[in-house]
Image 1 (cartoon, rainbow, N blue to C red):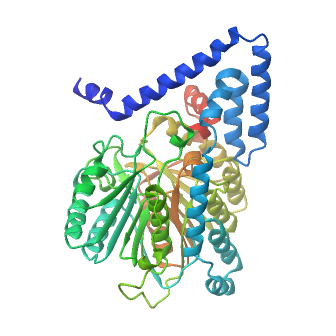
Image 2: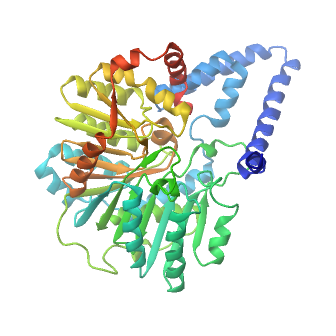
Image 3: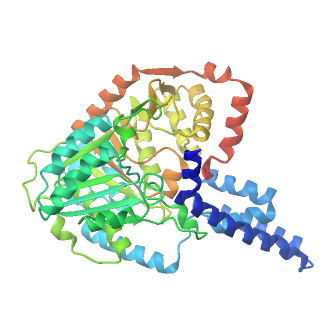
Length: 511
């Protein structure tokens, strides 16, 4: 009873109820308007037709279009009304202008690296073309003189991160989707507060929806009072807006400009298995030390300036200013970001590029296997062409509806020769792809529509770096704790399970 009382008194429920009330009023007003217009039904039909034309001509994923067209045609009034309110990535002219200014500043801070691309092209033209794409569309030129370390669990990342945070002398930038008070965050916070007292510039961005049930209301003010500069991203307010779709799903930590972290690991206790929420939690991150950290620094600062409405000198946070950079080259390292406010799905294109380049194998870890048609076709074609394609997903899900769609995608992939494995001990949250012992990407981007098209995301693409082989070895080791799901297994599932998955696949882009 106490849990229910706490839930109904939470900000998430209160704000959601206020939004639903607004929606109900708008829907009632639109439906009631039919009494006053002679040709109301004709008007609604014409408007639905126009809405469908608009959707069909938008530069977006076909699955996303179909998921909206179905409710618009079956529920002419409610369908187009919901689409106009929540469909796509609508932003105001003021927001677009502000974001374009930030984009220009980012491009100025991260100019192209033709020297690195030329060096890469001498080794592998295909890799150079992918690096060129990421540089041009993912706000991230390739870097050299950067050491990489793959961290196969939240426990491993926390240990390494605490060591690095303790050495900070000048600044610490952190940006996370979820932060929760507990063992993991408290250990980090103790160091951050100590560093603030030492005069270190400490800044934190957290997503307001991601933390709505894990942090107290106005937690940013608590941290501000302690000396930590803090901004919640896109606050969850009781106003109907499509902007509620766009969340900051990134995980970034930058220390003195020379050390950076990203990956799937948020700052909450289940990520270090301090308690078992969905069985054993399997995750991954990558640690960078060197010049490529600059990409992560600029990602953070550009969003910080956007939220705060300020303009600061990025150059004072460059790598190498406070400590020497590594002299050796650990392959090619390229952190990149993906924004929902443009029409370029960078995360999806990076994954597709890697799949198309594969000649021997593709290993994928993902918590949600809800890819679009292009990705499914690419994976099936790779497997049918003799590439060893293996995908690892959870056995114990965190979201049952997402797991239903994930399993609904098994059959088509398995029929084409893709090997599907479920992590028997619990939940896989890692977002990792490794190809041919040469390429790897580690980041925050799930194989689902929200991550690929609606969220702010980031990742690190690597070519012939130590972390590539470390990620491969971790995948193969983890595979020993997995159970393979075959095409025959999928055909033997109960009819209701298969039917539920088939129906939910239609609306997967809206989940």
